[in-house]
Image 1: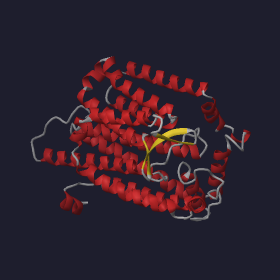
Image 2: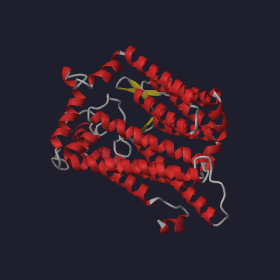
Image 3: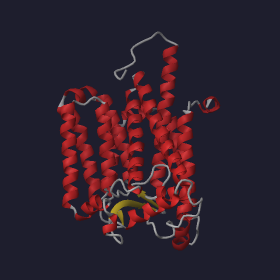
Image 4: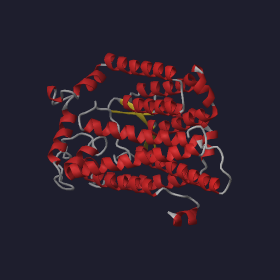
Length: 390
């Protein structure tokens, strides 16, 4: 990556670039294969979704250049602005005449030919706010209950807005990621345990008191009890995965994508991958996600050693999010978790999700760049303290 640095002044991490790039290419291939039938029938062109995904991939790469060149201090110092924007987006989608409703959920705002799924940018903006808060008020978070509760009130409000849409999966992933970052930030164990208990109890109560959520939460255990309704999607996913065997039925040869498996190119692209590429394709994909997440954590730890707290927290947040959401998506496709309606990062069709996922990778690369610069500066100067994480 030295040539890139010489031309653009940016130091890239080759492992992260390779893993993210490979997932993008595999995802684009599998999304196209999974969508040709539905695109041909509904849009009149078998490559309709491929064309749109390619356009937004190009836009994602342009946006990533902005992220790569923008110092992380800019994001850290403007955290409350991003918090405000995130809450405005989540609230605006619920306003009559503003939000777009599909499949009994109001999650989008129509912007001309594009539908903005507000939970995608809002999640990233909330991560930026929380990480900046930990830097500015780290001592209060570690020593007082209110220091910890204050940012969690905003996260709780964001989760409440997501649940009204409703988007239970996005709320769960957001809360889970923030709790991990707060734990890394050094919150007192007693405060942390109380909040986790309250959060889990609240989520469980909401599931228990909402019939369709309870059906989703329990239906995946015995999908054959209702094979034509609540269990239909999971059964079709399991059929696809079982057909794949070790080597798969061949690229483009999936049967389940032919109107049997709903949302084959979005939420269940992993099932089509398993059917066409088999266990080998599944293991390759899982390894790539593992490498991406592990590299994100390694970048975060290195940033912490040089006292780059905001970059470290942000890298931890993004790596956790990649790991958590990919784990949930694969778990749903395999029947190990209830259906959540979450896309597979970097692979599923979804314009907003793709832009945010690529931008998140660019943030990780920016953390690596600033950490490398700090390391070089440290080597050129006398040894000094390396920060609280060491």
